[in-house]
Image (cartoon, rainbow, N blue to C red):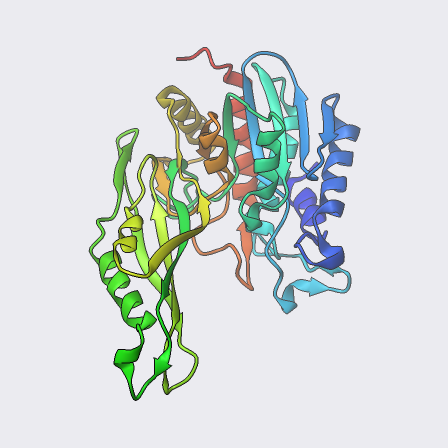
Length: 363
């Protein structure tokens, strides 16, 4: 089946988490397609993930997700998502992130006689913090290796599909400063929560960004205050103030944000902690890079990504991961989201090459 045709069919199925547009119909389509075209064991787990297996030996998983962020109004056509083929690209919600590479993985999975056990997994809820991936891991999903089909094209050079051996995570925190309300005409009668929050922000500004290296590639994190909310009226000393902090984490490191709690009346709440990813097997990364080189004219490199993916959850659970996908920087989550059809077909070829030769014994 043609990669563009399959991607169009999959993209047209609404799959954002809102009312009747959740991921069930897309998951049904994927599972039915695999059952009709392969002799693999295909199952839907309790979370709605689609997981298929064939072959024996060390396991390699081709991993994606079939949920998307809510579409722009221009990306809706009746009860479906709009999909348009133009100038060698497919346009529509989910083309780049990441139904195109789910389709590429489906085709590779169906066509390949794997060297070991080949696993296909398409998760739900990636856009909500990895809900599906985490549920699968809790249910025992533990492949030895994984190629995650998030975007890795255009990092080293325009149009080149690279191999991401690491990516940052994201920790979202809230600094909560509490004080005592008073009339603003007598500020000394209270404790100003905004002042305490400002003292905590000064602590954040002095925090060193975390850094590490993965397979010889440097990875630097960041910390930024992004929102502040406090006070109830212009003439009242505020008794509460909250400050949002966005931290991009790196493998094995976290910024010491707990230092803000040295300020009187200040506490730190962790709201989200999406783990970073680091590939721990150089031979696996090199093998995928070789497969990527054989599938294109450009010269792929090993790179690092700034964005968190489900690869972080898998790596945290012990799977050696790389990220290889068609999406280019800046394509995902936009009103004119699109993906190159040729690069989708390239990713299908890369996934197939890796599955045919990787059985975990190369290293």
